[in-house]
Image (tube, rainbow, N blue to C red; front, side, top):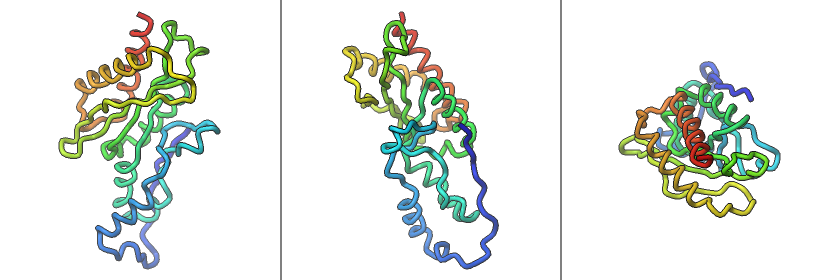
Length: 207
């Protein structure tokens, strides 16, 4: 899947009422327009997922003009929840998205990694669910922190050992973040996290 980072339109050729509003009111308008009702994913959606999720493409409002883009694009990335898949084609999509959006990643405040549940033999034909592990950026320090809570992303019944798997992933995720400049995670940093977390999980399940 190809991701595009759009440029803003050229200089305004006509009067823009929006830009005549005070900055704090413009921010309110941007938040209303850019905070999506659905969680945002960085990969191609399957048809059955479209009712619950939205793809992480920059809204048209962010391309109206240079000034509107400058003011609105940080709000889009800071105010929405982004999902990154860690395996397969969806992970490839996520890597491309991260690389295309590298300059905006410091604006994000909430990101969830989806890790496919693995059986002891890592049999893909048996596994049909994923665990969602979330990290949030501390607005004071700018550092990422991993939530204690996790989610099971599927309608399939939870496997018996799922709780211990989730605790392992949270623990390893925190350990990996300790080795990163967590206030300025780049695309390369995010890609390393998603890859290393997946590898460590598989090794733990098969060990």
